[in-house]
Image (cartoon, rainbow, N blue to C red; front, side, top):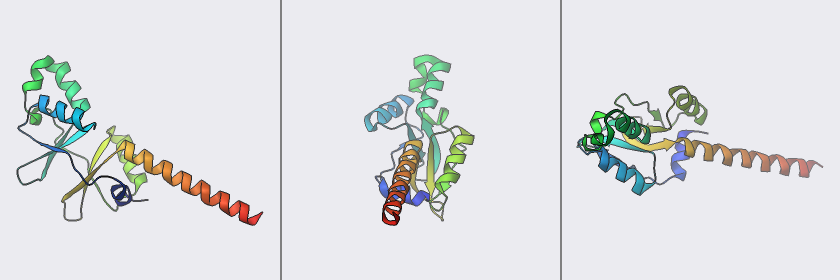
Length: 145
């Protein structure tokens, strides 16, 4: 299975925030959308970074509540690991495991941001794939027997 198959099953919405927005605004947006990470984009929509719940926790741990007034750019991850829509889910899982992150932006062949995949999306797709395989095997066995 490829990343593009996961993207087909998700909402096409990419929730993003400006680098100048405050961490407090980021926290509210994460809470309101019930998600774990935000894409940080420039004025033209290009990928600048990613800010996650983990980044917010780190900011508060380092600076206490005063961190919430700081810009997202102060704590976002700038060197973002990305994947392509033709990458396999196995490759994506390996990247997430090795990098110890739970959200990966997806870029098109011409480096446009086309989606974001979470570990939850990956797990859901793997479960659905396993259920399909089990159903197919049951049908095969019952037809043969």
